[in-house]
Amino acid sequence: MLFNSYEFIFLFLPAVLAGFFWLARFGHNVSALWLAFASLFFYGWWSPKYVGLLLVSIIVNYSLAYVIGHARSRTHAKLILIFSITANLLLLGFYKYANFFIGTANWVSEGSLPLMSIILPLGISFFTFTQIAFLVDVHRSVAREYNFIHYLLFVTYFPHLIAGPVLHHAQMMPQFAKKETYHLRLDNVALGLSIFTIGLAKKILLADNFGEYAGPVFAAAGLGVQPDLIEAWTGALAYTLQLYFDFSGYSDMAIGISMLFGVKLPINFNSPYKAANIIDFWRRWHMTLSQFLRDYLYIPLGGNRKGKVMRHVNLMATMLLGGLWHGANWTFVMWGGLHGLYLVINHSWQSLFANRTPMQGASAKIYHVAAILFTFSCVVIAWIFFRAESFSSAILMLKGCFGYGGISLPSKLGVLAESIGHLDSMLPAGVSFGGVFLNIPGLGAMGGLAPFAKLLALGLLIIWFAPNSQQFFNFVEQTGKGAKLFNRTIGWQPIPVFGFMLGCVLCLSISKLDKVSTFLYYQF
Image (tube, rainbow, N blue to C red):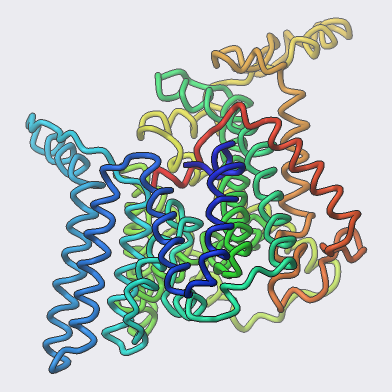
């Protein structure tokens, strides 16, 4: 079931919300169990047969966690932990990577092993990582609660189940034990619906519109069509902003929905395209996954404790595995490798200039803006591999971005050039007048370059100059009262003016639900 669908907004969510608070009168465990069963129904809406897999995973991991927590010795507990993590990774590996390894083996050995008929269960990466983190924390004596209903709800909680965030027991299970959680609060409802509305608008009004430009370009490259300079950058920038608003929109909707139940989800998205370097980017993008990879992979590998060289090796290994986590394709590994390389260069740069006196005044501002633009450009290039169906199509996109596919300028410019002296005959090789999007089927019907330029300008203004959701809604203490926008402080308040404006945005977004599309992170 999708957050951006009629059945979720008008049937599922109201029914689950009403049942949760009504059943709380009969006991908090009853209410929590209702929410857990509703979450299983939400998951099973896509494919009921995988509900059993999810339940088996939950029961087995809960049992193993209990055994680890009550083991007679640390050695015994560690052996069970190793077994538990291995079992989880084997399950994830079978469903997500079996065909990837078979295909790779066929390519290396020129063999012909048949691929398996496997359908990837939704959210398997998220609920697997969530449970691995719980197992490790039980072994570390950080997690000590063994209420099965709370654990069941912790893993299945529907706002995060399909596309994150990756949750920790300390963030969630104590909230399910609080009495306040089971009492309806109108301020939570007002805030939750407002955040949900902003997230829905990001998905419907922005992400899906950018997707209409990104999809045809990458599809054409997948068929071997060489995009020209404008076409390639249109596809790359469109996907960069599509993914931003899609993932940011999902994160907002998940936080808003959870707020209705009085439960706070961790922030997972913090204006990553405002980052002035790649290190800061990964502190802002998919924050819970970044923290998971840091705490359960990078630090156990040794982190930065064994010198600069090993820090770089550990960074690269972490990012390569993080890339592979996103999908069973070498393009994801390449994406992770690029970000690993970016991080190594970034850390080396900071070490090299650690003792340099920081710039002041206008120079510092110019440097900061240049750093943001450079970081953004590096991220865009890496996203090409993330989105491309194959290495060959990614290379075609990159060649287009660097001008190897030529450039076709709008026909109106050609008419103008001819009228002032046959300037078209003086153009460099590879540059011609004849219209844009000539090589990409479907893009010509979008109205040319002007509509995309307007959409792109709107998107960039939002990501670089508008306050993000936690600033606007002020649900993180560190943000203070509202946020600065063009030297004026703005921020959400539960007053009629904001209610009316957000109501209009909600109605507009709902009116566009006839073109329902899945969230991009559902595939991971």
